Image 1 (cartoon, rainbow, N blue to C red):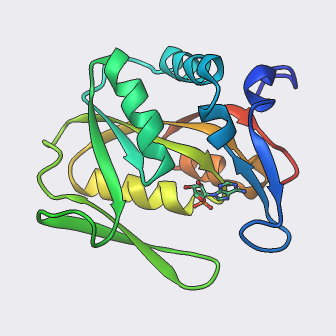
Image 2: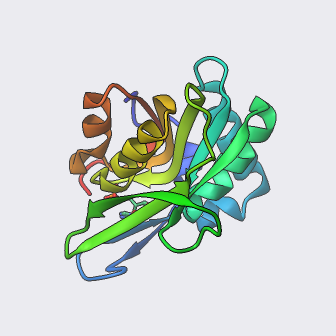
Amino acid sequence: MAGPERNADLRALIRTIPDFPKPGIAFRDITTLLLSPAGLAACVERMAEAVDGPLDLVAGIEARGFLFAAALAIPLRAGVLLIRKDGKLPGATIAEDYALEYGQDRIAIHADALVPGARVLLVDDLIATGGTARAALRLLRKAGGVVTQAQFVVDLPDLGGADRLRDEGIAVHALVDFPGD
Ligand code: AMP
């Protein structure tokens, strides 16, 4: 990551809510960035600039990832693939489980959403431990997708998720990081 002034304008638009959803968690709230016309445009433009090479699909993780995935896919002339919580998609799905701090969760995609060899960019608003993004990566690869890059608005580097994704061969890009979280 570059110096502290990198994307300082976007960082200033992200609100921190202490102790949400539970004591000790600093929730990095991007809804305040979404409310800013200039901030939202700059955010999407800078994410698009960081994309490497042509893509077929931008895969967004429910729910905030959908917003950035769709906004990025339009200028990139890519389609949008929805990675949803299990049980929401109407067609035949493939799913992947991942561990939460307490218990498990499951995400799913439509089984026919990908043609093998499709070049897919993975997108979410934030990466923390990387559990969600790594489950999404397994799912996309299981479906035959070629995933080499992932983008986030926010990285919490001390939680190690971005490094874990890099270990899986992914080039990880985030606009803003909050060290120490
Ligand atoms: P993880 O699987 O630990 O990388 O968590 C990533 C997912 O949880 C993303 O979809 C985020 O939206 C959400 N998330 C985790 N930690 C935070 C946080 N401190 N602030 C805002 N969202 C978070």
